[in-house]
Length: 107
Image (tube, rainbow, N blue to C red):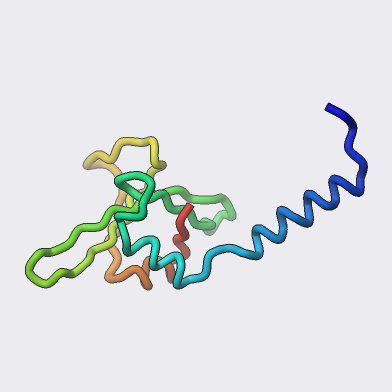
């Protein structure tokens, strides 16, 4: 691998910052969360910035009540690769808006 100039490194850094600026909008986040058919797995990986500054990982699972077609988004505080057990901490949200308001984003 050849040594890269500082100009090339700076160009790569600027390109990566442009990608970060093009992060999904709130509406895009909610649309992805609300459509499990678009998810790459049976549960959707999420992340948020915790109070301590570290990134928290979780997965989203939705359930639909057949009578009213009410969606209940539930966040389990574990990574995509961990098993969900009875001991796994979970939080049910009233809506996807509430979930996004709590800081969760699609990972």
